[in-house]
Image (cartoon, rainbow, N blue to C red; front, side):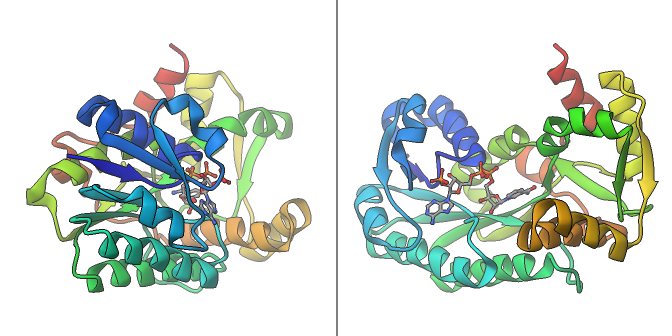
Length: 281
Ligand SMILES: NC(=O)c1ccc[n+]([C@@H]2O[C@H](COP(=O)([O-])OP(=O)(O)OC[C@H]3O[C@@H](n4cnc5c(N)ncnc54)[C@H](OP(=O)(O)O)[C@@H]3O)[C@@H](O)[C@H]2O)c1
């Protein structure tokens, strides 16, 4: 089976590419990247391709059986068209199976909902393409919180507006393992899966940090309005409102969904303690 993975210059694309090389062999995996030099280390053939045009993808998908589309970082309205370029290129080159990395989330009214909605539109576009497909709805990555830990420690706390809401996290490597199954296991085709671990509160997350990273953090609950203001001051209007929207959705339990991870992978998703222990090996 020959597979192509998009955006392999990014972290999820690279994680899936590494697992795909192990599974299908280095000669059966190609990558696409807007900036191919960033993906050189993977050792696979990389095609230059920007989501803004299907041209690079038409070249990259020649002779390819299955494509994994990593969702774009573009603004929500723009990314729908970007994803359509990749779907059309797959159709035109005779790709059989199309895998899309989407996002979890029930409908809500947060400033993150435009992103969720744009992902849902791409899911529809993938289904309408007539290609065999599988959609993974990814949980929130835990890695950014770990990378931010030094800042949390400086502040002595994790502060946001999630309150007692529950959020199921995942990691890029757990996702990569699931995407390999969606690529190779035909009994999983034409379905949508929530790729998430167990849902936890921010207070529980703080407890895990304190236990596995020896921090002494506390959790501080803020109102959505306070937190949005703080985010916009520190991360700018666009990114700040996206992050604040994510925590508002956690507050409203809009990410607290049943996990399909075991159905896809054949074992339970790793717990946060299992993932945190790997950092300290
Ligand atoms: N589930 C979550 O918690 C979560 C969190 C953040 C993001 N996401 C979504 O998941 C995706 C993958 O996450 P990640 O961790 O791999 O993010 P990442 O490391 O920031 O990588 C993003 C990738 O998207 C590529 N890209 C952006 N615009 C592009 C364009 N116009 N044409 C081609 N490639 C483009 C980037 O290419 P360059 O290297 O050229 O910039 C990069 O390879 C993100 O793009 C975002 O949609 C999910």
